[in-house]
Amino acid sequence: METEPNDFDQVKKIVETTIHTYWKSFLIQGGVMVLLGLLAVSLPHVATIAFGIGIGWLLFIGGILRAATLLKSRHAPGFILSLLTAALAAVLGVVLLAQPMQGALTLTIVLIVIFIVEGVAAILIALDFRRHVRAWGWTLFSGMINLFLAYFLWNGLPSTANWALGLLIGLNMFMTGLALIMMSLAARNLNPEK
Image 1 (cartoon, rainbow, N blue to C red):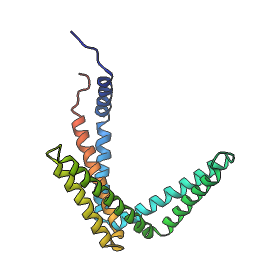
Image 2 (image 1 turned 135 degrees about the horizontal axis):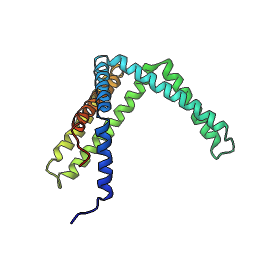
Image 3 (image 1 turned 180 degrees about the vertical axis):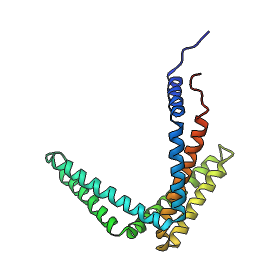
Image 4 (image 1 turned 120 degrees about the vertical axis):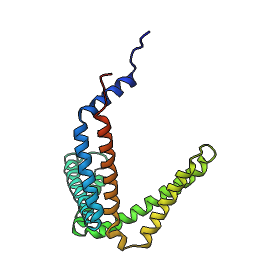
């Protein structure tokens, strides 16, 4: 008795076909990300400045485009507040472009807060997991690492702001690129026709 494929099987086949078809593109993208990640890790100060400048441009251009769009709809609810928000984004972008290291300091403080929140949450989740899952220690360990990173970054301010973002972005790019490479190598052997 032959069964009809369900929606999940059809979606799975489409995804497998797409990944198999474009595995070389994923491999190239992964290789580029690994190289850029290694470059950022080896020059974290430069990567931190580049990140600050990139965020500055995004805020500036986004603020200008939002303001231009809002000016076409002056009677929309919340027009004044939205226009002020757009202007604030553009001004913050200019500030980041003019002083990327000051922006890096602010972004590092935000990163510290994120590490603290994620660390405390992971520890609380681990304590709840210990009644249900044997491997709850990994979640606890992850939370403790986040708190350690927050302490390490905070304790070293302002000098950690010079390199922390570049290093962490570089590590993230390296790991993402490595994951893409591994996925693409596995995808080249997929046989979506089955």
